[in-house]
Image 1: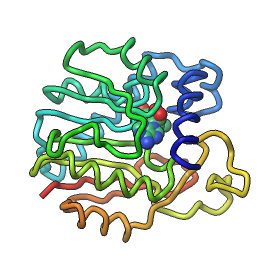
Image 2: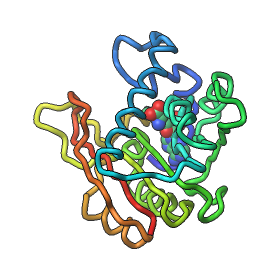
Image 3: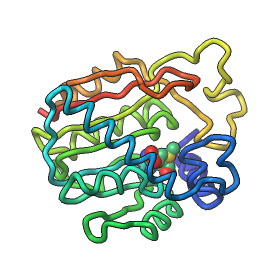
Length: 233
Ligand SMILES: C[S@@+](CC[C@H](N)C(=O)[O-])C[C@H]1O[C@@H](n2cnc3c(N)ncnc32)[C@H](O)[C@@H]1O
């Protein structure tokens, strides 16, 4: 799926059923998500993240944070108490509109719509922390690797990047989600796996040092996924 089609897809998904497009499960389809329960999952993730980094004595600077592919702000809102400022960026205007409507942290959080396959809207070294989860896996590998380089460019030296990607083949018996001849018209149905060697090479070339590489803790997915924590050197 090329970038323009990816963008249009997320626009449509963000307009039609944003919470289900973000956390897809059958029961929540058709506006079935309770908003409080939805945002509680974001706080749970950020608690896990803080404990994971803490366990490994990684103390990310608490200044400016970036949440890439923020959707309606599930993780952005949960990050806000931990940082001086959080910027959520998303390619889908309806997602950003909804994120602004449900923001509970005032000026501490801002949301930006970015429809480019890069982060040129942000200056070099403008963030202390960057997070992206359940975003990169839905786009082509060349876009994913380009964004990894961009995250490191916009981080200050000493800043920390945490990201999640799909890294493995589909498990036996899993539904095929990789693009078929006629790709499904829903970006969140496509899963593009990265080769860990390519991830390491991209990060190294952009000045990043991998601190942690951990298989996904979420059970029941149809593909192998991993979280990385990276120090901007
Ligand atoms: C599955 S949702 C995850 C949202 C959020 N990270 C969360 O965990 O709640 C994926 C989000 O990434 C956004 N997205 C996809 N491609 C993007 C891109 N190239 N740039 C910015 N946002 C993107 C989509 O619009 C969507 O809101």
